[in-house]
Length: 239
Image 1 (cartoon, rainbow, N blue to C red):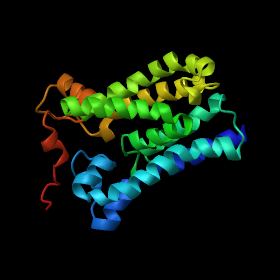
Image 2 (tube, helix red, strand yellow; image 1 turned 45 degrees about the vertical axis):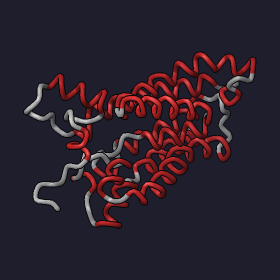
Image 3 (cartoon, rainbow, N blue to C red; image 1 turned 60 degrees about the vertical axis):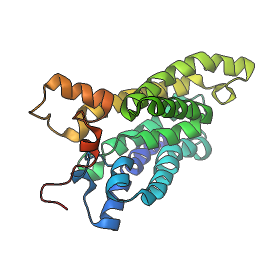
Image 4 (cartoon, one colour; image 1 turned 180 degrees about the vertical axis):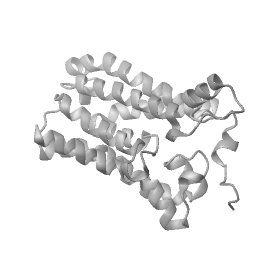
């Protein structure tokens, strides 16, 4: 019990490390929360800090924040891959990333961290997530809605291929623990939806109907209709 509690606390605290915020501060001296979407994540780093910083950002968030708690639970604590406790560790990392203790419970969207956990739990499921999201974006140039669709499809893929993986080796990395991955995927979807709607506790714009803003937040992952306007916003009086 104490080992699980310690793992969850570790996952939350490591997930809370605001990597994108630190990159913005150390490389350009800016508070990335005042730029673009205000999101402490890769898109804001790309547009307002520099695309080269996406490499260290991605490596840290995928392998340290996302995959790290799963690997620690498995290989250091000896948690079985069929243990539901294992699914909770990466979810706590996502909670930390999205609501960072160090940024007054502001943060990112958790997609890179979630991808790292999927890499540790089932790389093939991660490939399915990426394939749907990229194909949808290529067809529509709307990333927000297709990331949401890809997340919503994850529990369905587990339900379809989990049993097949156990019997036919079609989905071998799900064999023996589809339930753990299912709970992780359901929890992940809930956390991402909640984060989109709360959007770093920012108030709803007064120049748009509340229903329109909530629709944009959930499906487009922004408050306004124009993505270019959203991602390139600058602080008042800023450069």
